[in-house]
Length: 331
Image (cartoon, one colour):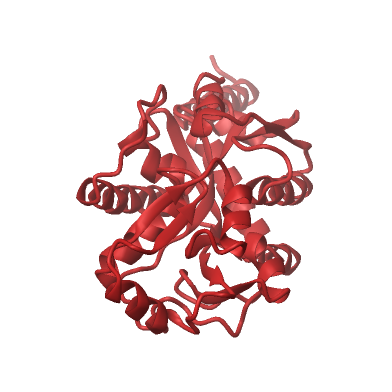
């Protein structure tokens, strides 16, 4: 006969078993509870010192403090981000290897490169981190004071004027194509191997215009070597408050730029994804982080995994249409 004591023990054992079963039924619940318990590697697809790297290091420091764990930046440049993407795609889906991607890797590269890692299937979205609008700049010697002047000048001389970019197929190049499509002007694209040579030739007047980040252009605008005509984001840049948006300048449907986001290998437990996403959103909302990003011409912008997934899909469709319409190809 079962005594009251043994009955109580049996009830406790059943309750414990049910609790274990419920925990096991929640994917990643156990791993998220103790996560992270060792350093997290944040893989950056670009060289140290650039704008993306600076943003990644800002995130790594703040995220590490938020999660009480070390977040280590690992730069893996090359092949338009494919080296870094492939590394993360092959990594264990445990939340300890993450990719700091930009919009070009998710929305542009699938249309113009043969990728080893499908950005849709190989990764799980975690969170956006920042928006990076571009600035439309011209040499100080070019006889235009605003976007309307530039459109009038280039429209009167189709095929004569040029726009530079840091390379074919990059977000600055696509910004120039979007500008042409929105204004109806006919420009000659001059691609360079990086933003530095493009900026040098722009200041020398060898090319007529360029879309580049606030961080890249601000010193030359301040020095009077370049003239900033518009920023390509939805709002004015805090770093250049007197420069109108492209929409304010009279050009509709021409917003462009780049953004950064964090991805994890596909199959990472959802509980880990959610914990990371919440932490990144908190970091992006911190006043100190927002101020540091604004100093670079960027805007802090965290998101849920679903919001990032939807943005990437929308941008991929938009850029795909532009790439096809403008017949953009890489050699």
